[in-house]
Amino acid sequence: MQVEQTENLSPFLADLTDILVASVAAGASIGFVPPLARQVAEDYWLSVQEAVKDGRTILLLATENGKAYGSVQLVPCSKGNAHHRAEVHKLMVGPRSRRHGIGRRLMAALEHTAWENGRTLLILDTRRSDVADGLYGRMGYTRFGIVPAFTIDTDGTSHDTCFFYKHLTPAK
Ligand SMILES: CC(C)(COP(=O)(O)OP(=O)(O)OC[C@H]1O[C@@H](n2cnc3c(N)ncnc32)[C@H](O)[C@@H]1OP(=O)(O)O)[C@@H](O)C(=O)NCCC(=O)NCCS
Image (spheres, helix red, strand yellow):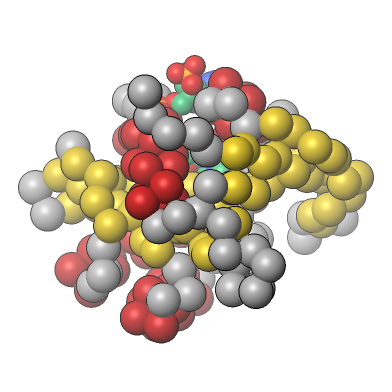
């Protein structure tokens, strides 16, 4: 398994679409509600491809033998006073590939990429009590707030969202 910055996601489009559809079906809170149509998921990844081309996002993929198993995005802030800042978007690992350290490796690679790009402050959010909530805390992210009822399911159930930050420091 390797984690690499990817400029061309075409070879991985079907894998990434599978991962997104399956993750949403399994209850992930990553901006979509189930059931997520395959075409909608594919369109999302095509929009990410455009964002990568434009430099609006940096895409990292966990791959092995030409197949993608997970992804995360680093979204640099373009504001004049925030060239040191970036957001972390849509960390996801396919449900069948979880609990093998891929999520942690994606986040470690993302931090390395952020540092290499001069982005030393990372901001992210996740649904309260999700697996990622614990993972980010253990990776040194500071939880700075919780917004009640930040997301609402199709059945009307609301969920709180936790916001985190981390100042990166040079690797020792
Ligand atoms: C969050 C996610 C990316 C983690 O991916 P993963 O490859 O399973 O993660 P890892 O195997 O690297 O495990 C990371 C940590 O989470 C823990 N963990 C993973 N799954 C867990 C589970 N179901 N229950 C409890 N702990 C779990 C691991 O023990 C590990 O702990 P550590 O940090 O102390 O070593 C994955 O669960 C996922 O895609 N979830 C849906 C999408 C999502 O919610 N993304 C976050 C959006 S902000």
